[in-house]
Length: 85
Length: 178
Image (cartoon, rainbow over the protein chains, first blue to last red):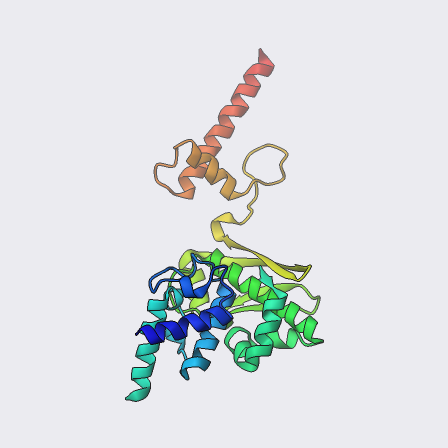
């Protein structure tokens, strides 16, 4: 879990253009409140697809999916479980 | 608002995947040109999509950015075409028409979107002033502010406004007589 969170933080650092260091963001911190814009959330989604070798289906492209590191981890977990089946 | 540099970065990093997630074929065709022209045009279209999301009061339904299309007409003027969930949400909100304005300057693209509902459409003025036509909205607001819309409907508000106008006319006539 911590490893996944760190990977997500790395993607955030490179693509989310947050005004704060991604390393200081807690798992449940609201990323939109931390400065994540709609456009950056699209970049974040595409970068997560590259980093975790998954594809976000249309049904997951909602604001809540990218609300926090924890919600991104849950979405990635469910995608990885779906791929593994 | 959208930064043209951010869109250019995304195009360079993610290429077609970025374009296909956000923009329709028509939008891409409308923005063909130099890399700067393309990034600027797509940034303006993204700004319009984001403004539309806000105008529609989008909450947490899945968002397909391509369901909000900026359509450029032969004159160069742009309009919005909604499909899928965007169109369904507009219908639920009672929005019949969306007006869009795009602009870009200094590396930033911006858009303003206004949603119009049937009850906000300008209608022939019922009062006898020289305004050339108050809108139903203004009349409804006038009625609401004075707490006279007991039924919450436009018909009630219109009747009340008609009575207010009649009362003003009567006062004027009395003043003239006096």
